[in-house]
Every structure is written in C-alpha cells, then in structure tokens.
Image (cartoon, rainbow, N blue to C red):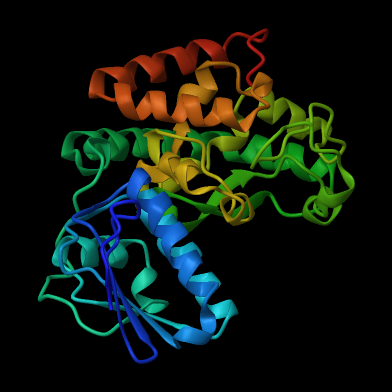
Length: 324
C-alpha cells in the first residue's frame, strides 16, 4: 500500500507490521509540524504496525524544528512500545545528529558513509569561523576579569548565605544539545527545591518572578550588575555558548515546546542578545521571547553582534536599565 497524499508530503508504504515514512529533502519548521502529525496519526493505529521506519534517503538538511519533531516522535513511539527506526541517513543529517548527541539514543539501521569531523549545514552564525574567533578572544578576556573578581564575589556570597560559590544547571543549546551552564550563585542553596512554591509570572515555556524570594541580597546585586554571569565565559570558550545569541532554556522548558518554538534553537545561546538589550526583566511572554530570538537569527551579522555587545555594556552600567 502506498499513500502519497499531498496534504502530508510524507509518502507512506506498509508491508506487514512495518510502515515506512519517506521524509522530504528538507526538514524545517513547516515540514516538521506535518512530520509530527503524520507519525501521531500512525501511532493512533498502533495495532496495525510494530515498527515505523523513517526513510532519510532524500533528506539533506534538518534544523532544530526537525530535531524537535524527531525527538517528540521517538518519545511518542516509545510510550506505545513501537520501534522507530531511521534508515538511509545522509551525511549532513548524520553530522547534525552526531553534534547534538542524538546518535546514542536513536535507532539507526543504515546510513551513508560520513566523517565525524563533517560539519552540518546550519545557521551562518554557528558556522562562522570569525564569530568563533571573536568568542574565543572575548572569553579569554572575560575569564581574566572573572579571575580578578572571583575573590571578593566569593567572599560576599559565602558571608551572605551558606552554600557553594558557583551554581551549575543543565541547559539546552544549539539544536537542543544539553550542556552545563555556570554562574556565581545568586540564590539560596535550596532554590531548586523551592521553585515549585514560587508563582510563575511569565506566560509560556519559561519561569520568571519579579520578587523571587530565593534570590539573596548579594545575589540581587550580582544579577543587577550581571556579575553572576561571568563564569559563563567558560561556556563560551568551550563552544557551548557564544558571546551573543539566544537565551539558553532548561530541558524542562524545551519539553513543553511546540514544534515551531524549536526554531529558537537554530543558533547557539549567548551571554547576551536581543532579550538582554530589550529589557529582559520586562519580557514575560514566551511569544515575545520567540520574536526576539527569530529577529536575531534574521538580522545576524558580525556587525550586529558587536552592536548588541555595545548595547549590553551600556545597559550594565545603567542602573535604571532594568536588566535583572
């Protein structure tokens, strides 16, 4: 049986208890939405098949929305004990799956020959060598500043509240790849356990409270001056982050993303970005976050990065900026 309904753009063929889904040449946001719908429809007929084969033979490009749809479909299939298998995966897609760490969790039966050193097609800001060099130089300078500031900051943190000097948390970066972000601790040591008791004043897939009781007195100063983010220069040096990018979400936030919202992960997260220079403490609607992130992706250039860095410096030294 072959179904080539134009509506879904994902031709289907079934043999016994196996259904093969042919993927298009590009798997971006529009295709990713239909991709998720197509697999969801198949899973509703779970008695008809025990294995769904995803034929990537034609696919040469996949962005973060495609990755999001793939992960969502994998979880849905696993919930119904149905095997999801990828076959004929082409080198550009293999490179993306490798860099995002998904090769370890996906069942890939066959793939074209490729090199682990191969770079996937991605947003220009991610593959820009000059941007990466700027990040490295900026990170080294930033870490020197951090080394000078660490002693007084550490003393202030410990005198204010017991607990570690540094705080680390799992965040999602480019294409949803997880990494450990580092900051100077600005909250009480049991802040994560207290989170469920705090009202979320933001709407959508992120958390914000203007009067968060978990923030210490010293922490409030560190956040107001952005000193709490100095250790993130280490994340920039490692390549998990950039000096300029989008806001790095937590895995819990990404779990709630709809497929189009994955677009914000097409670039690396940054220490600063559109949300920082547009009053991040006032941004409480996730749709506004998406708009700012997509604006950055659309307008990106090296000059635009330097413009945002300059604006960030002005905001940090303006106590009335509201950058908290």
